[in-house]
Length: 339
Image (cartoon, rainbow, N blue to C red):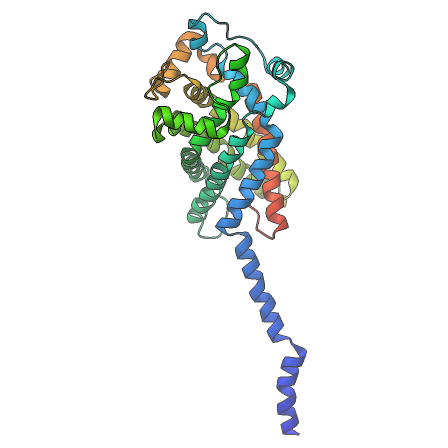
């Protein structure tokens, strides 16, 4: 009987399969969780979510860029009226009417290339820095720490993605240049990269990178910091779960703050990137971001720094909403924790 008992004991342990599969399930869960919350997975999800948001809101970005160039000193000095369009709606309809509706997505390819670097780096670096600040396990950061993480993540991500942003701005302006009777500068993404390197060397790919980095630091201070802060504030104060309602409210606030903080630097960045260059790749209109800022305010007034604010905000609000909803939903689908 003892022998049977001895035999039956392992049989029960193996036949009942309570311990092995149970430990197997417990072993599988952390693997899935770790993968879904891993750096690589977070990077891929952020790029996918950013691509969705970019495709949905890109016409507003093109409209914003065209508005920011209006009134620029180069065209005025050449005796050409640069005020072809005066408002967001007129600009958008003008582009569709005179250049074709598909031209509202002109330059979207380098914009998507940009997000492969920019969005992945900014989200992952912010997450890494946030985890360093919250080793206790809490995701709620003090505002100043969240701001430091947002500024740093945005600056690093944008510096790495500046070449793609430069190409995007130049391609966006090609349709308008041709309508004004000017010869085209670039014909495709590859041609734009080659021309930039030919004129200014590899360093030319980072033309306008400083105002670009400054803008990204301010935008991410508004976007990442506001979203993270507002989201956890709503969840803590209103005792709400991590749901779509919270994501919507936080992303709307993030888009508005990002637009307010980033538009002046965005105007400077766009003008520096769009200015003509000499054979050595040096700008013919502005010596740098500070010079562009001074000239813009001196010639057009302080309000010129907020040219394109309405489409910038109207774009950032749905962009932020689309991005964060897509990002959080995809993470939920693959079993990752809330961001």
